[in-house]
Amino acid sequence: MTSSQAMAHCQVPCGIYGDQLRFQQMLEDEHTISKAQTEINTLSSSKLDAQGQNQLSRWVATKEDHAQKIQDTIAAYFMAQRIKPDSASYVKTLTAAHAVMVHAMKCKQSADPATAAGLEKSIFDLYRAYEGKEPTFEHSH
Image (cartoon, rainbow, N blue to C red; front, side, top):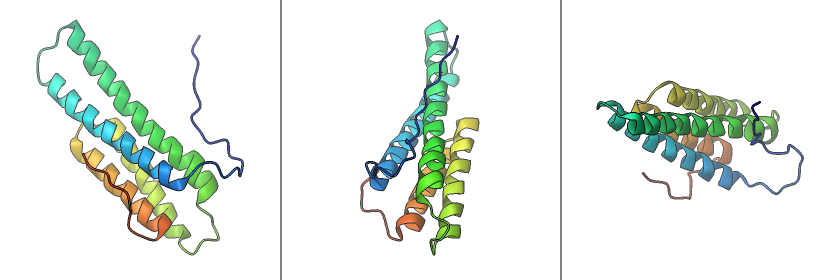
C-alpha cells in the first residue's frame, strides 16, 4: 500500500499564506534542483558502487520532488487562487506562471544545469509580472 501527501494550499480565503514566501520557497526549491543536478552529473561521471548508485537515485528523486513542489505551488496557489482573470496583467501573469511550470517540467526531464537557470529566471519573471516590480529579496547560488 502506498500513501501520498498533498502539499497544496487549503484553497479557502484565509489570508494566512503570503505571496512573498511562496516566491522564496520556489527559489529555494530551484536552488535544491540546481544542487541535485550538479551532484547527479558528478556521480554519473564515474563508475558507482552500490552506495554511489543509492546516492545518485536519491539526488534524482530530490530533483523531481522539488520540481513538483514548484508546479504544485503554481497550480494550487497562484493559478487556482491568486491570478485573477479580471486583473489588468492577467495574460502576462498567466503566461509567466505557465513558463515556470514548463521550466520545472524541464528540470524533471534533464540534469542539464541550464534547465535550473531557466527555472530561476522564470520564477523572477513571474514575480515581476505578478507584483509589477523588481524583486526585493536576495537569492543566490
